[in-house]
Length: 457
Image 1 (cartoon, rainbow, N blue to C red):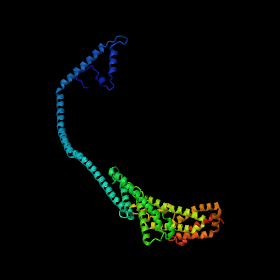
Image 2 (image 1 turned 45 degrees about the vertical axis):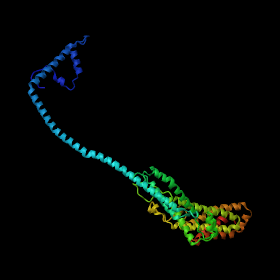
Image 3 (image 1 turned 90 degrees about the horizontal axis):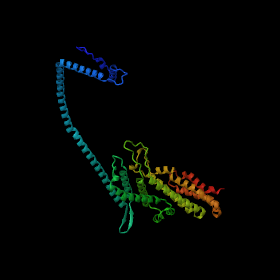
């Protein structure tokens, strides 16, 4: 610090960064008092501090008086510079404020309005989309109602029930379309909000569910009643109703045969449409051929048909082997059942699955026979019939042998006749099947072994 006059105040001590007021006051008190004095005299150090303050104040007054003009000039220059800066900043601030107001009016307010309009448009689109889906559901429901009326009509004059099996396929296809529409309930899909609409729920409960039950029951009945055997007396005994039995007592005409094929084909296609379908993959995924449609209802109906034929044949053969005079007629009935199975196999092989049910074209089955053969793990339905029948027949013959008596002795004595009868039954029942007459020797051997094996030598 440059001073024009000497000063006894140690400015360097006060300007030192390590200066401590407490240490300075303690030093001042100890230097002006005797440490052994009981009452300390604080007036002397206080007077010195006040004198120092007055000295500094007078020194500041002297300096400010001598340098008043430079200080005022410097202050005026800084004030003018500040005013010029403020004027420039104010102009820019005003321009910025004006630009922001214009931006708010032209962009922000319009964006807020556009966002509201977009929300309204989106909700209107969802409403229109749901309305279209509901309209489509109702249209398909009306179409299904008309198809069900065509399928099951009653003549008022004669009170005769008439059924159009082709209408059954159309109704099943409509039901499949409705089910696919209702199943598309993921966000963005057509049926996203359909289940929340009361009229759609009513449609499901009062039309779709009853129609599906009736169609499934009628299609399964058509499969159960399938009979095309040329063995008229035996075919009559395999019918499930009196009407079917009376219709098969005489050889079927060509028209009746074609009608049976057409009715069974319609039933199979209807069961395909009514079978549960796998859900479609999510939109990000693509079809990679790993999902394959399986006509579950059709497979159950066909397996039930085969199981019924097996159960009836096994029970009839078990009775006939106990009373050999009835064996020829029983074998004729069994051969007729096998002929029906052969005809069913040929019919299923000629039926292609509906194209709309093919989920992955790369793995699509060529006909409806392939899924059934895969489910039964066999290469042929007649072969499955004879082998399954033989597996159950061995135990029944063993029971006859174990009981003994006239039935067992007659069966042993007539073994060669029984052998030829069974052979003739297998060959006759397998007529028309793939493999030809010489291709069923294994089935003949299995059947003969199941009957003659328990008899011993």
